[in-house]
Length: 258
Figure 1 (cartoon, rainbow, N blue to C red):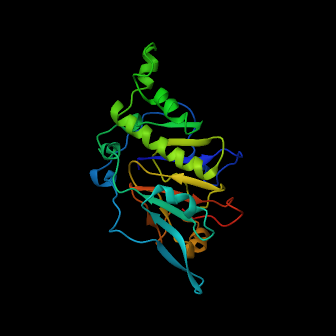
Figure 2 (cartoon, rainbow, N blue to C red; figure 1 turned 30 degrees about the vertical axis):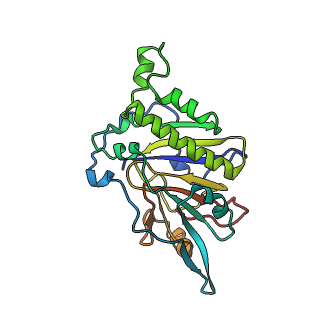
């Protein structure tokens, strides 16, 4: 699997995720050689337009627990609702760099990556310094080599603007001084089992490869107790989606299983 995905977590308190396998060591990675097909990396599009998904809760009443939204401004009210465990901004149009990343000829070891603590006003500059090859002119050959990526600067600028927008949205929800951004390429499932993150809220989007999966709340406990890496109840997000998952630390309630 070759999945590139940004994640966002608030920095109000230092905590570890119950899905620690998704955190890669901060050191130079060996070259990744992955044989992938066009179908495997194809852009995942949403099914025909659907209204907010309503799930029967214990058979007594319908409660809105998973919400698909067209306007990112609606994310705050949605995820802060007591009933909602997963709020998804389903973008009507994909950025061009996501289509470019679906090209299987791109070298996975040269895909852009970034990890750091940022604010809405600093994230773009910090990512440009790390990712754009023209940002620093007086640099050694080794530094130039380390900046080599498989996307052109125009696509990287588009990616940075996309991350900046998501940081701004996430920051307005969590209300902290800064947030953690992790843009990384995964070559496996990331987590060994289905889990609920030990965080208040996590924002996730996928830019390349298979998208994040989740199960409906009504089958959450069944899925968790099976301790399997796969589930017959699995549902997939798409490349159009920016998802907010509630974790176990959101007002001490049960989180969304992914």
